[in-house]
Amino acid sequence: MAVRIQEHWKHHKLIAKELKLPIFAAQFRTMKLAAVGSVAFDAIETPFGKTDKIVGGAGSYIALASSFFVKEQSLISVVGGDFPKEFLTLLEGKGVDVSGIEVKQDEKTFFWSGRYHTDLNSRDTLVTELNVLADFKPVVPAHAQNAAFLMLGNLSPAVQLSVIQQMTTRPQLIAMDTMNFWMDIALDELKETIKHIDVLIINDEEARQLSGVYSLRKAAGIIRAMGPAILIIKKGEHGALLFHEANVFYAPALPLEEVFDPTGAGDTFAGGFMGYLAAAPTLDFETMKRAIIAGSALASFCVEKFGTERLLEINQDDLRARMQEFVALSTFQLEA
View 1 (cartoon, rainbow, N blue to C red):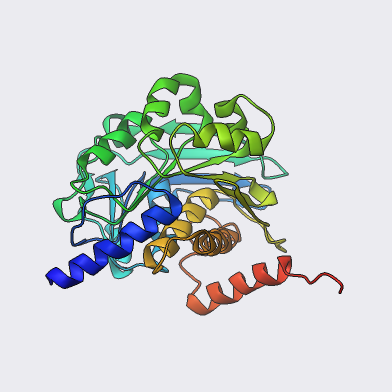
View 2 (cartoon, rainbow, N blue to C red):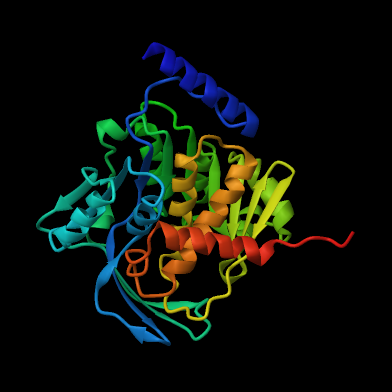
């Protein structure tokens, strides 16, 4: 066992050196991936239809997406007594440890309702009921405190930092999602939290707000100087950008025949990205490029139906074929 741990540590030191990530103490990992995020109810209306209450939340999408690649993962969240046990059982069947999901029997689950405009790029929030999320203090289970990868879903920066502080061993890679809301009301806390992460995932509007510049390439340099070695800028229907040092990769968005509901697409992307990396033998830039495509492919499935429905229908063959579509979309040869 000692030899295996030494080889494991030597391997990760090389990875960390290659991407200039923090090098962490060697330790046998009991969990591949830990994620924190909301598990919630959504009610969604788009130009193509509407739903009653359905399961949603960043944590749900992250866990389902990453489960295509890793089976040793822990989800940390909170729900009320009204949340269906069947969904938690479904997650367990996909290899997701749900012992970190606190169930407050006498309270209600977080609920969000929204209406999307015709272009699906803008929406109106109709109802937000924080319920159990109002005083959420995530507790990372002991067996997940040395997870190799940590995904911080969109929560307050203080809550995200509290999760990092509970890790007994520094994860190999910490990724974090955030939004302009926290930039407006908790900028100092946000800047403090991103000092401790490796990957920041935001959209183009948020990148410009956080950096104070319009050029996304300049914005990437400014934001990476705040702490994260890697920046991912999501551009919705226009794809995503990956920045690391002088390297830039652009993943296009796949033109789809039908887009029903963009809710959860960004979280699905993040979950697919982190799941792919957690299962990969190396963490070089080429691997990250493939992880971006994996996340983009899963997100493209997510938007084809309401909520998590499409993610629950597809299999590994579907995902492989969809990733190949991304390859065909952006591969060409210059004339001799």
